[in-house]
Length: 435
View (cartoon, rainbow, N blue to C red):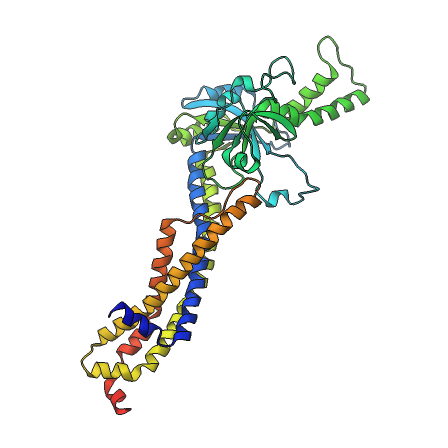
């Protein structure tokens, strides 16, 4: 059956065919747009699993008495000596721009840029998968010197790195000043990150000592004022009130630091995590396997919900095809009966009806795909402009395009099964008798 003939027969009742195609188009359009979001999360989950595969996270536990003893230096040293451990370092992750709940009271409902404080020399190890595209990695000299807080060798403050997305969004350039948590830094490098879920990777990397000192300073000032009001006596020869307050706050914060154990080979991470658990029963050991499971579970939940909504929307188009083809068969009953009487087989009749139904599905799928591509192309830049991190949430892929087209054609063919069966069972004797 030639294609022009198929199209002519499918559009015999033009208004009904157009409405049917519109229903399929809407369903396929929904499937493609929501599927693009699902594809983004699927790729993000895969990238996140690869990213966390090479490290183990350590967090202190609170004991039965409500005390949190922290991780003693001796235990950290034992962990460093374990086979396969490349480095052990603390990590502090905060909001890139700090809190401003008055102007942004729903901070946690939208992804925000994060800044990660790490040992400058270990930054490339902690952030495997990050690629420097301009400038360089942090160096030891980019952090605070030993002789004070304000004397640094860089022109605008200690060294910092930012992601390519936020550099593009905010116009940052290497060598220029950047403001992170209301403090001035010198931008020494711009990097790209794996495409992982928003809010998991930092958009800035700075020396942890600088970040900690600025983060802890307000608490230390309050502690010093409290100690002075309480009349605490300090031996001036050994310690000042300021250093006592700083040590007090630092000791408390040390109990809640996140420690990252970098593994030299990602395949050994699970076994290394088990060895750490054996020597550190009082420490919460988060293995990359467990972290990957949680990331995958969250991603799968969203993907399932997305596709369920999309499939329900597309089934409506399938029901329209059933109705259209059933009416078409009914209207052409005499014609079909005459063709059967003239020698056409039931298989030929059924095949023609299925081809017509599949054609309606293919046209609707093509229109839905084109509409979805146009929508995604328009929405991705807008979403990136709205999010502080410059991320997008749509990922149209060739695989998704093929899926929706095949699904549209298959949906049309499946919806045409019943009308085809009815057409093939047409009794030519009864049809000729009714002429």
